[in-house]
Length: 590
Image (cartoon, rainbow, N blue to C red):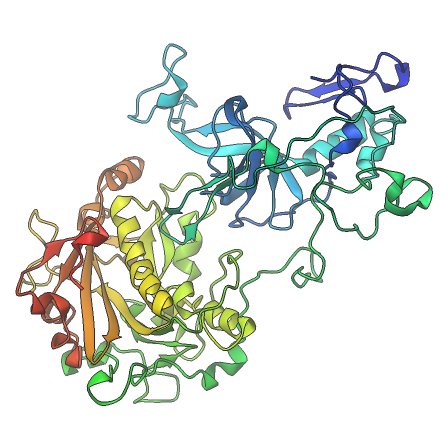
């Protein structure tokens, strides 16, 4: 605890704003015991510039939930939207985290964590997870929280400027100046040697989009002894080196130097990190059939039967070319559905590069085919991707070929360029935004294979796509491959596939091996065109998708595609068993 400075009347200060839920309190430069001093700790500059983070960006929150040790939360932390002086995000916070700083990707403080956002009915009453009206007699854990809310730093700074901007204690804060130094006699304190690794642990969780690693860092791991690099543009007291302060007067978090993205001349904000140069699309190499070898190891793109040829989207100016080639992968489109027949990628485990976490979610149409042959933002922009309330459209843009799978090459720069190329709408499909257990397993199938390829620096192939108008399963999750086609349900004018398929291919010594999988989301989508909007999310969220390992032959019947020699390389057929539900990776026949 720190006490108000009783030695200086000028330092006594208290200001609070109930609407913005923050307070400014003057404190003494040292603790009551005299052992702790403010100047030994870093500080965070507060910038009044608006828009320091973009919707879709992933924030980080440093918190002490319920008085526990310091935790750095990087799980499910997507910025959803701005709501006046507040910002909504879905960071994983718990009670007791109020007042925690929320950082953008450049470690600027964009908000102070404030509270959760409950779901409400038309009369503004808070609802529970089971749809009842919540009252004070119920536990808060029963509330249906749809987002977290923070107070925007720009709103706090604006309020301070108007209300107390001229106060000698507040003006330096608004000017982002270094804290004043206090001359205090310090008593040397014995410092116990730090046991690095102690009290530090890691968790891994698949969120359905990418693998993230939340890192919880207990307080002893962050100490004032950590050296901080010079901060350009900041002056110390009297211009002295390091500001003449033990901690150098440096902010706790210094913006990265030389790593900032291009800045938009239009609004001065960081530009989207995903960059695609569409002027060179004609030179993209695309998927390579001989990636694993020639002869029996050659894996050509699936063939589309003559009965479906009229639905294939052709490149503009060509009546024969349908393959859309990108870096490391290729796509063939169904122009009637605006979705891919298939998307196939080559993966080189020996050339995988770490290009960091992608920032934002920017997708482009492919100009080589007609706009109406590919579903774009006319559908996805209505999905409320950055809204907490997903009832208007619960479908996200979902990669077919994942960015991680395409992110390989001779250099980091080339690998990033290849991964960014996956952000074309041709490589996209509508996916239910909430990834429950089944979809986590589905998304993890490629991680399962990719880990094998990376470990042995091997090469592999992933093919995937939707099943169009697949047979109904008649109460089961798995359709009969020989069953009659049933039209896929529609939402927002777009037909949503009931099933998606995936084939993983690799070379094991002198043998080609293939594993085929089917994801069934029919329970979630079959009635989306008839379910009332208010019931939509509840109905869809109640159901889990199912994942099956199936034979390549059965997959060919469902999709009507010809997978060539992959039927002979099928791991499942080699075991002479039928389709099997996959509930863990141990269930996979390799």
